[in-house]
Image 1 (tube, helix red, strand yellow):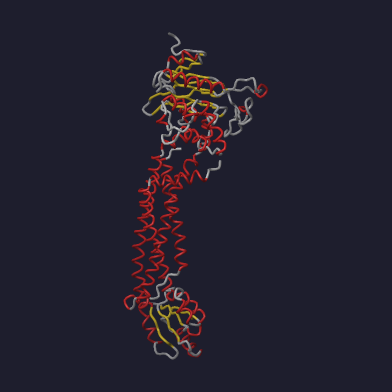
Image 2 (image 1 turned 180 degrees about the vertical axis):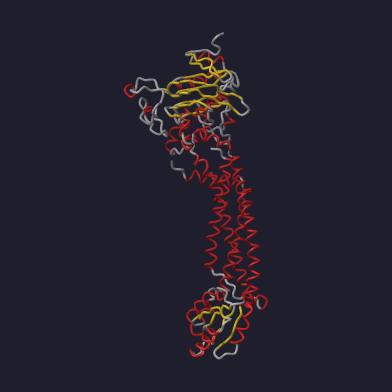
Amino acid sequence: MAIKVDYVAKETFFNLKRNLSMASAALITVAVSLTLAGGALLVKRGVDRATIQWKGNVELSVFMKADAAPAESDAIDRQLKAMPEVKKFHYVSKPEAFTEFRTIFANEPDVRDAIGVDDIPPSYRVVPNEAEQTRLIGDRFANTAGVMRVSYAKDEVEALVSITKFLQIMLWTVAVVLLGAACLLILNTIRMAIFARRREVAVMKLVGASNWFIRVPFMLEGLVQGVIGAVAAFSMVWVLRNFFQSWIQSSNSDVQLFKQFLVTGTDVLGTGALLLAVGMVVGVVGSAVAVSRFLDV
Amino acid sequence: MAAPDGWPGVGAGQGGWLLFGLQPGYPGLSANAHRCVVATPFLMIRIENVTKTYKGGVVALRDVSLDIQKQEFVFLVGPTGSGKSTLIRLLIKEDKPDGGRIWVAGKDIGQLNSWKVPLLRRNIGCVFQDFKLLPNKTAYENVAFALEVIGRPSHVIKAQVPQVLDLVGLSKKHANLPHELSGGEQQRVSIARAFVNRPLILLADEPTGNLDPSTSVGIMRLLDRINRTGTTVVMATHDHNIVDTMRRRVVELDRGSLVRDQARGVYGAFT
């Protein structure tokens, strides 16, 4: 039996309207929790992007001059191979480094497009046997011919990673707790909607409305709350990210740490899709539980 | 009369519909029943050794067996608590018997999947003492609601609702809300709602319980008229006058047991 779309839409809308205060409470909770979850996800994206060159336990990078001679490079290569303290290393060529650069500065087309592949320094990414040997290795190359600079993971990212890790854990904890609360609130909203419509439901059962015909408007009500909450969360995340991004770019020294902390529009959209999915799941789960527990069909 | 639909295998019109979808071993039919389709009075309801005990050991029905044929009009009588309402609840599968089996229109309803229960209920109209009308809907909307929620298209609703409101004598009050109607009129709306889908069976649980005697007569005329269209009517009642006047089959329950089953009976048969 086909369920009439206009009937279901009408029922869902009037249920939400009748129960506006409860529905808003559920909706706001969904929105806040998903905003926090979205924030945590974007922080993680930003950190991943900013620390891309330090992936895989790389503790130091030896940047060559952009115009370093091949012989100078080979010398570095030989030396690294000969060092017992070096566990492994890999060479990041100019084109590879250029791709990496474009990823990091994806959001800043001015910077990104001003620099060509020949301006980019190639580098050696070094994984030491022991973290304590990092300086020892780095010092040997600091003044070698063809080397532009040696940079250390410790200086560049450790603070960033430790700060954001704490931030992420906090955001996630609060987000998960609030999501649970949102689920319960939706459950309660649906429960009240079922109670408000108990006469209709009794008559529907009596005249033989199918079980799904009775359930669907309530389920849909939960879904709508989840979706609207998610959309609100997405807008919040979008606004906050733009605000944060422009704040980083306009201010100077004190947020130097976050200079490379960038989140692209694609990241935000991907996160938005995820938030929408989570919102839908929360809405459907909350209302499904309410329907199965309080709607005896 | 329109063929009842929504019931799997039913839909062949007046004579033969009951034979569709019959389960093997259905007790009301002999092996060659298909040869005398039109002539045989069909079993609409068969209740076989049904027992129902509620929590706390209250026995509502004790080994009740009862056959009701198509087109019969049956009064269920007995004092409060004798099990009349329980029987009606069991027939629409709102509750399950602890023992025994119930067939409705050839189906063992104990074996019905839960998703098929609505289909059973579409073939049984129900009328109650307290009407169970929706207070914020007009008479017309209350009746239309019953068709809407089983997915009938709107042109069917627009055709059938005025027709059935006319049948119950309320075509002029279709736009009134329940509180603007008298008790008798409200019960007529509720009967219209029960009958609008042309059910095979109409169950009425003390339909005149809240009404004065003269209003009750009007309701009984209406139920009689519905019975004459071929609908089986089962009515639980306390009302001596009605039962004695109508002289239809009377089934008496006392503390859950069937104590009397009398054709053309009266309320207190042995006095």
